[in-house]
Image (cartoon, rainbow, N blue to C red; front, top):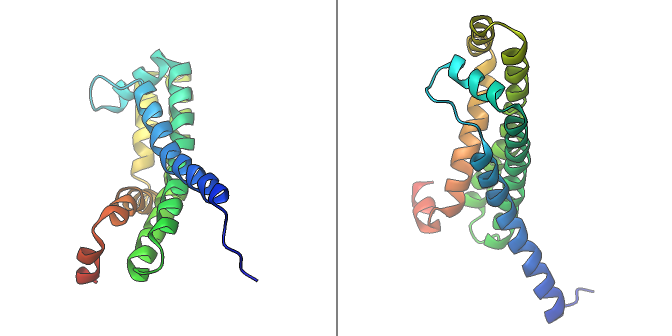
Amino acid sequence: PHTTPTAQQQGRSSRRATAALLAGPLVTTAGLAVTPWESERTMTAYHQSLAGSPDQAQIAALLLYFGYALLGLSALTAIRRIGSRHRRHVAIAAVLSFLGATLMPGQLVTDFYDLAMAQNLPAADAARASEATQDLAFAPLMIIPALVGFVFGPVALVMPFDDVAAAV
């Protein structure tokens, strides 16, 4: 038989849900704050920023990696709180959020490869190798779904339900 949770159980559940909602954005923000940003938008400047602060670059990549994964937990918690009244909207938000949360962290592995290349190869060779990865035919199949899910999953969660229902 189904029993109603006690006030204490509901309070604990609410605190856990709030912690889950906050963990992803907080860890991701910490990762962005620690990131050694490049001085200009070139691959060489990016490599110089990584090689100039290798420990900081690795810490930032790890924080972002786990922050993005925790954003998935945040999205699942939000979806659970929304309930089933808006099933189509929740399904779209869930799929997009899942794509973003599971695929985006994988993009950060390249920070470690780029750091190693910046430390061990001449700057021009390291930049050329990194840029060549963007020209590979199937690279967009990894990058595009990650970005679409990462950007539009959270947007779908916060859009007013009536606007979404009218759009679909």
